[in-house]
Each structure stands twice: as C-alpha cells, then as structure tokens.
Image 1: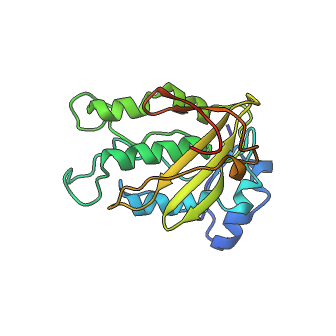
Image 2: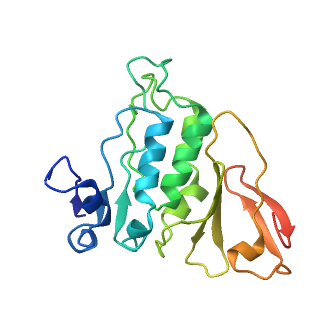
Amino acid sequence: LRTASSASQNRSFSSVELHQNPLYPKIANMWRVGGDLSASNYDMWTNRLDLATTNEMANLVGPGSFANPDFLEVGYTPRQPKGPNVQNIIERQSMFTMWAALPGPLILSADIRPNKGGIDDLDIINILTNEEIIAINQDKLAKPMRPISKINGLEIWKKDLYQYDHIAIILFNRNTTTSQDMTIQWQDLGFNNHLIIEVRDLWAKQTLGNHTTQF
C-alpha cells in the first residue's frame, strides 16, 4: 500500500494543487484531501467529504486509487465525552455511510479497549460491523459516488456497482435540526420510469418492495 499525505508533509503545494493533482494515482494508492480530523465534529467531516467528492477528485478515483478524507470518527472519544464535539448516532451512521460510498478507506480512530468509552456502545458496534454497508465500500468496481441532486441540504448520490443490475443510492440530509422526506426519480438515474426496481434499506437490513417511477 502506497500512501501520500497532504500539506502536512509538503507545504509548498497550494490547496488547489493538492485537490486536483493528477499525479496522485501514479504514486499512491490513496491520498489525503485535507487536514486532520481533530474532533468528532459533524461540520469538520462534511468539509472533508466535500473535498473528497469534487469532479476533479472523482476523475482520479478507481481500483487501487482512493481519495482519503481521513480517519472515521465513529466511536471517537474526546477528553470531554459530553462536550460539543461528540456526534449523535445518526451523524455517526451518516459518516460511515459516506466514507463507505466514496469509497474511502475505513480506518477507525477510536479506543477499541473494553470499557474505555470508545466502541463499547452497541449502536456504534452495529455501525462498524454492518456487512452490507462495508460491501458497498469493498465493491471491486471502486467507482466514486456522484451527486444526482443537492437542494437545500438534501442530497441524493449514486454509486455504480460491479454487479451490473445493482446500484447504491445514498439519501443524505445535511440539515441537523430537521427531518424531511426525499424522493429519487428513476429518470434521474437514467432509467425508464416503468422499470421495476427492488429497493433495500441497508441500514435497516430490510427489503422495501418493488417500485416503479420513484421511491
């Protein structure tokens, strides 16, 4: 595994050069897209997500070539466990989803010792061991997820998979205070509206039936 760090090791590069450098895949299997994630903080990791999903970055991603938005903070325990930098369970689940779909390296930043407050929580264990989400990350096509729409913090992303009749769709609500329904139209995916598609919720591990036109 060859890796390349970002500005922390070569400060002569500007941020623009770092984010668009076509040499990355030639010298490394993965490269950092921004600075360190220094806290379990929603705004911080969504910033790194944005850096990892630019059009320029997507053009560099493929088998053996991955943009690295830094470690997963799922289970990260700061010095003040109840402080403002601790994500809730939905934010942690969202981070794992987006890292898996990028696809980014699933490298954990957490205390894994028993009774140390890291990954002891059953909800966190369930996030980190969801085999269906991990399978999306490990898909051998290694296609980057790409946005279908972004409207008022409601985002729909598509990720093509190796199994030709399967795709991964990510519904991501960036708004931290509101819950809202989201709809994906088959035509937005390039499909005929009359196509029958079986939908499965990979977090609930439930098949949600066959649908036409939209979900």
